[in-house]
Length: 613
Image (cartoon, rainbow, N blue to C red; front, side):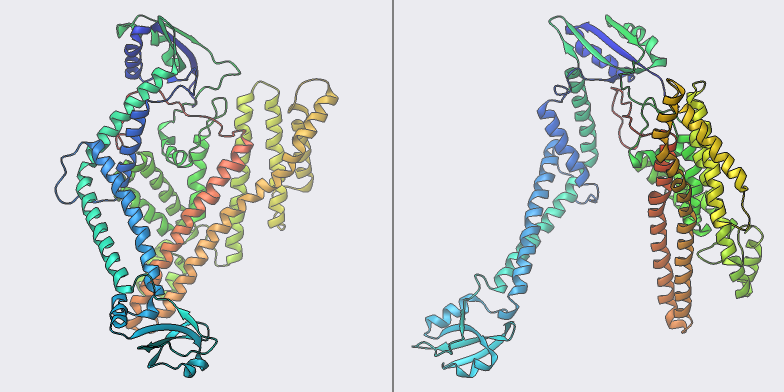
């Protein structure tokens, strides 16, 4: 449910500003709206310190504490962490450059430049030339040696003379010595590597201060929010005023609670006007609360005047997830992860996150049992394998109500279920709008959409099941005609009949055409789930073929199974977002008239440490 909001204005004496802000922060119900957003910023020093501590805190997230904890202030420790990060980035960049230079010096080997200088001092000057291979015999010098092929068909040749220049063919090109030799570069790389290890040890010591940094971060964040709230108001010579939004249920008591806090303040509340954009606060029933985790991931929230679709998502997403994943054993893995890692997942994403994992897992187990899919193996295949597998398959065969020996028949059943879910899903969206519009005439247009979608469902069903159509042709035409008439007549129920029909046609002709695409889009539930099954089945066959070669091949076969099913699970997780979320956020939401255009209700309140949410 989207909680109704009231606009609130609070005025107090200017000298009581800080006391008012402290009282409002303690109450934690007012969503402050800046009078001038450009001025509603934290102090630069506080904001800079918060930014440094926040970045350092995140940088230490993957560093295990080791050694002794330094005696440093958290802000000083954060600055040192960031300095180490900057120097480490520079060192890594230099190290990569050195490695590239060393690779380019393979031709020169580990010879040192000072060795050439010593030879020249002794009177033996070494020169290097690049020339075609068939020209190397034309060099006249005391000593020559081909060193390698720097590029193409040319070779690098060293020529040594004592007192005079070597005689060279015309196509010889002089080659200069490198600026640094490979041993020198390797020594510099070793020094950088040692410095990086020292930095890593220092980071491990600084990681002991992560809890202190978190505490200081919340302190700085609280200070920054306080100054932002102070700068959000309007200051006069003697008065200070603040505006914002408060849940309607809290509005009436706000003035009294400020009096209880010892403040002499004036409070005015009013209903939002059509031009206002109140923040959105959604209260979820207990059974719907797990879906909050998905909304947090997506970062979506409905507009204040839109509908709360969370209950519909909570019903549809587990079903869609189950069909997209399709495997009972994958679902069991989700359940085990949700149970065994409950606290860890909750610490990262709130209590709703592991609950949603459990719901998705249980739904997938149920669907996998109904379709007889266990790691890509059906109960019939278990029975055919004999032995203990036959006993297990016999136990799992009766619940597999949707399994068929004929793959085409099984596929058709899932297709039909997909379209049934699709029409129920889309019709539910328009029914929600009809309830919202009632008793306005536009509710009749939404009822028309329900009829039109049902008729379109009959067409789609007939395309895939021509032998068993769900509606007769006259019934389909009647549903489409009656639905279209209601939509056209009552979508824009203003003005004369000609205007209503004209505007209704213009605004709804494309949406009517799109209903075909929206309905048939639900076939993805079957297609993705079937793809998951075939991938698992194919890798099972591959692993079985490898294992059939004898005991030495059992380990590679097991590795194939583990890696293949792990990859398949990852693909299933991607499919949940790519297809399951799409059907809800796009097809369903657009039919329900929700654009997810809201901004969250964020009251000015005491900060909450991570892990306490």
